[in-house]
Image (cartoon, rainbow, N blue to C red; front, side, top):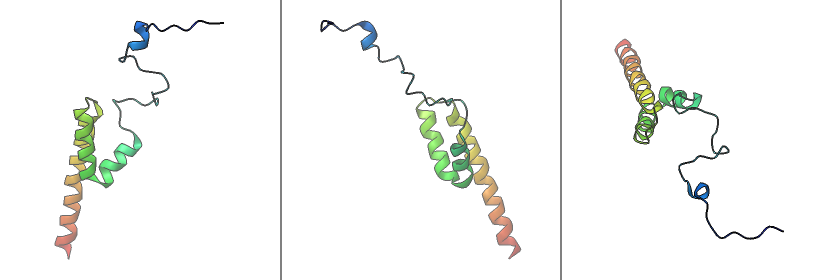
Length: 86
Protein backbone atom coordinates (compact mmCIF):
# COMPACT_ATOMS: atom_id res chain seq x y z
CA UNK A 1 0.00 0.00 0.00
CA UNK A 2 1.48 3.40 -0.98
CA UNK A 3 2.31 5.78 1.80
CA UNK A 4 0.99 9.30 1.90
CA UNK A 5 3.65 11.83 0.95
CA UNK A 6 3.01 15.31 2.32
CA UNK A 7 6.08 16.77 0.62
CA UNK A 8 5.66 18.78 -2.54
CA UNK A 9 7.89 18.05 -5.48
CA UNK A 10 9.21 20.88 -7.61
CA UNK A 11 7.37 19.39 -10.56
CA UNK A 12 4.08 19.68 -8.66
CA UNK A 13 4.64 23.38 -8.04
CA UNK A 14 5.76 24.41 -11.54
CA UNK A 15 2.86 26.56 -12.74
CA UNK A 16 4.67 27.50 -15.94
CA UNK A 17 4.32 23.98 -17.27
CA UNK A 18 1.18 23.55 -19.37
CA UNK A 19 -0.90 20.45 -19.32
CA UNK A 20 -1.51 18.62 -22.56
CA UNK A 21 -5.25 18.46 -21.99
CA UNK A 22 -5.46 22.27 -21.88
CA UNK A 23 -4.10 22.66 -25.39
CA UNK A 24 -6.92 22.73 -27.93
CA UNK A 25 -4.56 21.94 -30.78
CA UNK A 26 -4.84 25.43 -32.23
CA UNK A 27 -1.97 27.79 -32.64
CA UNK A 28 -1.88 31.27 -31.17
CA UNK A 29 -0.13 32.44 -34.34
CA UNK A 30 -2.98 31.65 -36.73
CA UNK A 31 -6.47 33.07 -36.82
CA UNK A 32 -9.27 30.56 -36.39
CA UNK A 33 -12.27 30.59 -38.67
CA UNK A 34 -14.38 32.19 -35.95
CA UNK A 35 -11.79 34.96 -35.56
CA UNK A 36 -11.85 35.68 -39.29
CA UNK A 37 -15.67 35.64 -39.40
CA UNK A 38 -15.82 38.01 -36.43
CA UNK A 39 -13.33 40.40 -38.06
CA UNK A 40 -15.32 40.41 -41.32
CA UNK A 41 -18.91 40.52 -40.05
CA UNK A 42 -18.48 42.53 -36.82
CA UNK A 43 -15.33 44.53 -37.52
CA UNK A 44 -15.59 46.73 -34.43
CA UNK A 45 -15.92 43.79 -32.05
CA UNK A 46 -13.21 41.95 -33.99
CA UNK A 47 -10.89 44.90 -33.46
CA UNK A 48 -11.60 44.87 -29.73
CA UNK A 49 -10.91 41.13 -29.59
CA UNK A 50 -7.68 41.72 -31.49
CA UNK A 51 -6.64 44.29 -28.90
CA UNK A 52 -7.43 41.80 -26.12
CA UNK A 53 -5.32 39.14 -27.88
CA UNK A 54 -2.48 41.63 -28.34
CA UNK A 55 -2.56 42.58 -24.65
CA UNK A 56 -2.40 38.88 -23.77
CA UNK A 57 0.73 38.64 -25.93
CA UNK A 58 -0.77 36.42 -28.62
CA UNK A 59 0.68 37.04 -32.09
CA UNK A 60 -2.71 36.68 -33.76
CA UNK A 61 -3.83 39.93 -32.10
CA UNK A 62 -2.08 42.13 -34.62
CA UNK A 63 -3.42 40.08 -37.51
CA UNK A 64 -6.95 40.37 -36.20
CA UNK A 65 -6.64 44.14 -35.67
CA UNK A 66 -5.35 44.56 -39.23
CA UNK A 67 -8.09 42.40 -40.74
CA UNK A 68 -10.74 44.25 -38.76
CA UNK A 69 -9.45 47.66 -39.88
CA UNK A 70 -9.35 46.44 -43.49
CA UNK A 71 -12.98 45.38 -43.36
CA UNK A 72 -14.02 48.57 -41.57
CA UNK A 73 -12.67 50.46 -44.60
CA UNK A 74 -14.30 48.03 -47.05
CA UNK A 75 -17.72 48.25 -45.35
CA UNK A 76 -17.52 52.06 -45.33
CA UNK A 77 -16.67 52.12 -49.04
CA UNK A 78 -19.63 49.84 -49.79
CA UNK A 79 -21.93 52.03 -47.67
CA UNK A 80 -20.68 55.17 -49.46
CA UNK A 81 -21.30 53.64 -52.89
CA UNK A 82 -24.82 52.56 -51.89
CA UNK A 83 -25.66 56.02 -50.47
CA UNK A 84 -24.29 57.90 -53.44
CA UNK A 85 -26.19 55.69 -55.91
CA UNK A 86 -29.54 56.57 -54.31
